[in-house]
Amino acid sequence: MSAASADAGGSDVVMENSPDPAPPLLEVRGISKSFGAVRALQEVDFTLRAGEIHALLGENGAGKSTLIKVVTGVFPRDAGIVRLGGEEVAPRSAKAALQAGIATVYQEVNLLPNLSVAQNLFLDRQPMRFGIVRDGEMRRRAKALLAEFGLDIDVSAPLGSYSVAVQHVTAIARAVDLSARVLILDEPTASLDRHEVEILFGIMRQLAKRGIGIVFVSHFLDQVYEISDRITVLRNGRLVGERETASLPRIELIRMMLGRELAETTGARAATREHQAREICASFENYGKSGYVAPFNLELRHGEVVGLAGLLGSGRTETARLVFGAERADRGQAKVEGAPVRLHSPRDGVRHGFGYCPEERKTDGIVAELSVRENIVLALQAKRGLHRPLSRREQDEIARRYVRMLDIRPSDPERPVGLLSGGNQQKVLLARWLATSPRLLVLDEPTRGIDVGAHAEIIRLIRDLCDDGLSLLVISSELDEIVTYSDRVVVLRDRAHIEELAGEAIDVGNILAAIAADGAATAHEGRA
Image 1 (cartoon, rainbow, N blue to C red):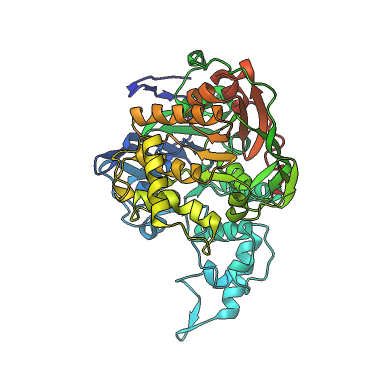
Image 2 (cartoon, rainbow, N blue to C red; image 1 turned 60 degrees about the vertical axis):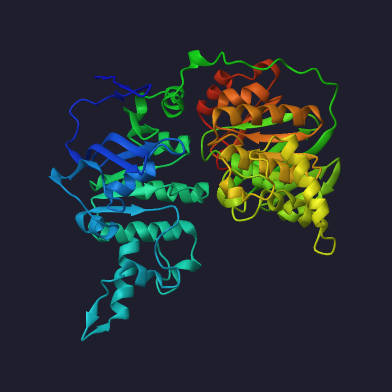
């Protein structure tokens, strides 16, 4: 075993090689890619051997998707080389990459659901005679091809009529039949139940035995440890390390992904607030949705901050959307102030006094072309309905109040919100929901992508809102941040709630340990 370390912006690059490794099937060396001033990849190396399943991991923005798109020719690379079977390749499109032997199957299968399974399998290469497609021959070949993957279905039926699992198998079968030597699977299990995952894993192992190299991108760590031979971790566009899966402790993998040592977990936790027994604002019992997030129990109390912690894809946003009603649960019971309620839509959430600031504020939150005033009054107007329009005087009064209260800059309520900084856009979203006088506010990554000064202001606002009696459910990838303001922290992994921390038990070390713990038996319980 050998290890090499290099300082790369605060990260250690760790490489571990097994004795007598097989020759590389795919070699990526020194790949760099920038988009304007943003460096998405910085001299990244990656090696895939024939017959191995290699997990590519990293948090949001780590560079995984960019690396895949550079390798497959979707993005031109700025620097570096790609070798396949020892020969340099430079595909300029996904089609060219496939012709070279590199195929990608994405979470959203990029086939044509309106065409039959057989037509998708042989798209652009249908068996022909005298210029006419031989449908019978195509169906016969399709059935024989899918039989190799243990799939016996009506290949004349539209692909879209089958489950996501069948669509994935079809996409994989097509790629393999096109002589793919490298198969990249990007989040293939995200929408599969446990039985479907087992079927897919069986196919992956079968393909690996045939010498195909498989790159497996996933946020489900249990699955990574179950199926992969090696793991490569990216962070902030740089290579952090490559390790044998069997010799990589989970806590070390988490450290590589998040960029922190457990020794750093003494972070500053705010002094525990002394509260009298708080009344329950909203509760969720055995609440969940199949294929989305496993059933969970959660109580949210007035004047309390509950943090949701976990890696990207762990089920944090899914939980938030279920709580607000943006997704409809298919099991369990929700209660507000002790009374059973149905949360079948965001309208239901708003009616019961819930507010939701989404993670993607630019696409799912603000309306960039509208003014600060118009953005602030949106939710209140929706709550009142079209038959009770807010007068311009009321709108101006509300906008001025929250611009002043939250120190939104510039202070002109008529300025288009798209021209504001990220931090001030986040304040406008907070103002929108505060104007509805909510009992519960759900904040998904409220400090992401904002400057240090605005970051501190948002944290202060969270504390102030809590002190005013509001119930807060807050998602953040910044564990130090969650530790600072949370009264309780719910830890998630693989779309399941796995642990709840309270009081002095809330520290970064305990959160990391829960994320990294072995054997998340409930990971797919709600997805069956």
